[in-house]
Image (cartoon, rainbow, N blue to C red; front, top):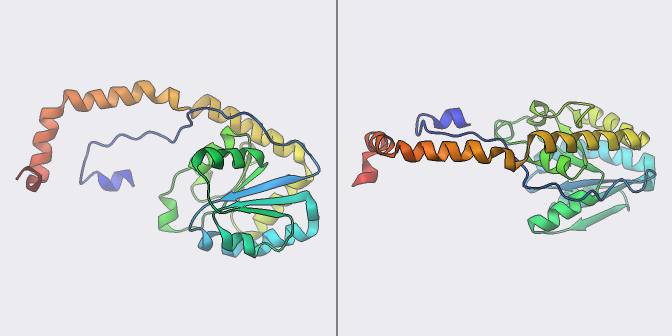
Length: 224
């Protein structure tokens, strides 16, 4: 996406999504019961092909799999299990608290041009909270290590197998979450971007006369 914008403005700075702070660890308190969290908007086209697999797992394991759904009431209603909770809305701090109380974060993205332009923010949010990511290959395979910092699925069959594996081996699932949190702490903290961000902004300021001249040449209508 950034490369496509280069024709309109060649001065583009790219900085990876980053986390301001690591929240306290609050999950994996009961190895006999794991909670899957799904909090998203406008994901109906992404989860619809996968809901049957989720319901199959839910029926097979019963109360061992709990669901916490934020925002998406259609997804909540499609879950054929009594072991579920729904919250209609939350501010960001509450969202992170809900996420951090879960053990697994469900992150489906269908393979569309729109989705391929999305970022891995949900993965690093989950990693920061020590929540094991269960994610589509679209977008997330670029930053997640399958089996190490999360589990990646490509279709409903993959999803079913991955979720059953997470439930069968909760200690291994927790280790995946621990590794993801360590990755975020080591590579994806906002503090690590302070110096390069300041350097980029200062370079724009230092070159402001040349940049304004180039902008005037590209878009003279902005200058009356």
